[in-house]
Length: 463
Ligand code: ATP
Ligand code: MN
Image (cartoon, rainbow, N blue to C red; front, side, top):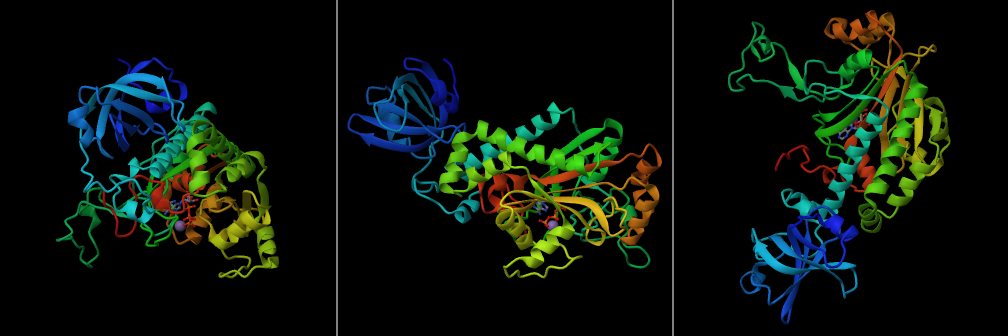
């Protein structure tokens, strides 16, 4: 007999079809002579209603154990549903109970649980409506990202997770070592002797795959990374994880305008894709999590993003009739409250801010002729703030060397990166998208811990 996914049955199942479903019981209602159970197999938000008459052979022995959370297999025939709420239901002919779930101890009984509580049962929370919807949308976002780039001929490149270069100079690095922490080898002047470590030098978990993506772009033209990145951010915010996924396209023969065009098309594509693939889940978020989710998605898809320079953004912020907590002045970085003011209040749509002061941006961003600004761009989105950060890269060897030194780094450490400017250098550009920020934005979920199956944050690496 055909083993079918519930999403597909609910969409296209017809009366009289015989089929088999496997899943977990969400609810049970026992009536006189028969019972209803609702089964969910993770393929959709909606459950499949199953009617079990007492003449089903296993009824006697299993019905009392078909509780919320139990794993079951039901073979039966589809019938048009008499009840409200569903088009079709399954009339059971054969039941098999795999694993029971004791109602006394199974934590997911039928009531609303807070996201805080659900984080304490990270191994079970994916069986709830909210997390089912989140992880289906997360999956659709991943698929959309690959499809977008693959359709355009970009090569997916796998950049290393262990690295010896601190790309951003951010300092929020996790060390990778195989040294015995109880007996750390020391040099004569008591520094840690990394020559005895696994790689013979200090190494870290990567904070970005960009530098290596640039290497690959110089051979393949257009590439992208999509992989995990790590930051030892000791900030407990609703937008920071210690382990998160990043998407980083890199394009040779491309300037900042091309970069912005790609980023805008990319965001629009993902939103359209998810609305088309997960309409039921998106409707759920709009009703239960944040009632602006669908309007925001439409806003992204239908509006041209506002583009303005950092200098103009500062002027607008100085004129703003709101009181900010952090100061606004040319040369200071924009804080989240400023970004949100621009996107949410002023323009009411995504805003791309370009040409930031060189001293607040990374060494690899291309210096403009004014020598004060770099060809950087951040996309600021309503509700979330910065969602994409990108730039045209510095392709001129002498300027890049100067910038590396000015930022207190050693050109020797980046010899291979500089080689890209020695041999066949070309204008190129790229951006980084924090994948969880995107999923947060898409779903309206307030806390980034709730859009990744196993969040890693300070003091928390359970599950
Ligand atoms: P923020 O100011 O929010 O800390 P950032 O300037 O440190 O961000 P980038 O270094 O530009 O961020 O990283 C690229 C993208 O990765 C960001 O635009 C953001 O979407 C995402 N990102 C950065 N840090 C984190 C984090 N700790 N957890 C999840 N996503 C992150
Ligand atoms: Mn940061």
